[in-house]
Image 1 (tube, chains in turn orange, yellow):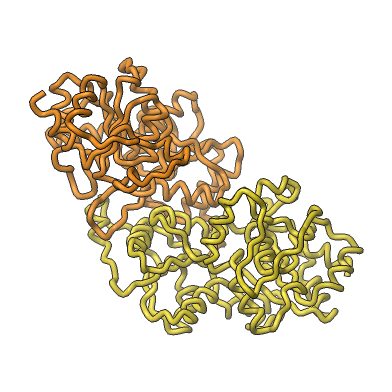
Image 2 (cartoon, each protein chain N blue to C red):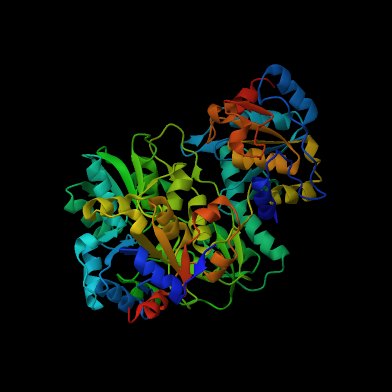
Length: 304
Length: 333
């Protein structure tokens, strides 16, 4: 069973874990700003000699942007300690020696930039509004680029019918790759009456029209851990993933052989943990530990 | 109600029949594969079927224009004394528009012989005595007009682009209207991120209704490199963001048949649904206790029929008959 975090098991965690991997949205910050006590806890763990990494499914930003965002909060991280899905998607294509063009349904500032940094040709990112009033007009606007051999979809606030037509038309060709940064349905924001749809919504529009499933780069797929493990020589059994979503963060931990802590300051709720059924799917996303938020861990390690 | 039943059906481990109430007949026990249309079974069909219900896109016409031989077949059936109706999931147009479109193509259908999903959605809300406001993700010219015709207030159709470049900007623009008690999603060429935020946010309230005209993933365009995304692409993101499933108005839900059955006093066992999609038209036929014929001039392919029934999970979407197109039936009658 998932154990509620206590002083006793927090101390055990400090003995058994050398490396902490933190999700960002819903753990360090959310739509309202920094989550109280989280960054202090992370910095305290570093003081205690733990290595700290960040693994986020967020496809809105580049790796560089996350470094700056942390710095703005007074938290210094190095670029090779952060992984985000815009970067891992570009890295994936590089590792497959992809030499063609990518049709991007996502932001120029994140996915576009990461692909550019790897020298991978891309088209489509940014605004693409509907022009004209009829199918005739719209179909006229869809001029497919024969160089495109991959559709990459992530968070796209510029989602439009034109983009759906283009992306799904490219996907008609079976040899066109279909990659998604992540499939999270929402970005976390507590205590408001507003929901913030995430990349999963853009991906689902494409899977419904194309009948195809994408290769997913982000958690729970192990790609981002693989990179960190190689670069920093990590032993998964001495790593702990800390996140706010059972179906991404915790499943990711299990897929990579890491320990896991769920914080309830984001998407998943206490019922999701305490009322989880005994199905194999639920077991695959059962955290080792859970706590209200990261500050809870922080308060048990003060003075260690 | 149908969605609860569909969900239960998906989770059951044995093939089962979908029984939705007193109006529906249990399906005949089908042990044989779908039969390709021949002179012999075409004659059998004429003996056993009084009323034909036709899907439109992919059966009578598609993105390229009228499908060869379909009109002639339908007119011949009428000559033979059969009653003919038109049942389309397309939520892009009003019922009035479809009457005109059918007429332009030569079908000369009366308004009460045609059903489309913009109309049935408005009718559903009217018959439920809905008095509040609807947030519409769809076209003003179809859903908007049908709601106007029954005096139901709504907001939302048309362009709704994002303003600004950050969360703070976008969230500032989202002011929820407290009168909204229903989100209705239909075909929306103006789909945008703002609309997804609004729809998902309204649906945070459990007592806000969630309706969808249909969930077709794409519209038929044979032999083209282009895909035309359908309403399913609007519904799915809203469903995912809200964690809720909509009440679906169109096929395979039986709503449109229910209206025709009542108005025209139809015996489902003497009705045949002719369509181009297994998961809407043929499933609709089974849900309503009708016979069914699949034509391959639209979305579904011959592979879809010849794959084992297990691929359709526990839902039987095997048509009774199938043919290349409607003209293949026409040539035998």
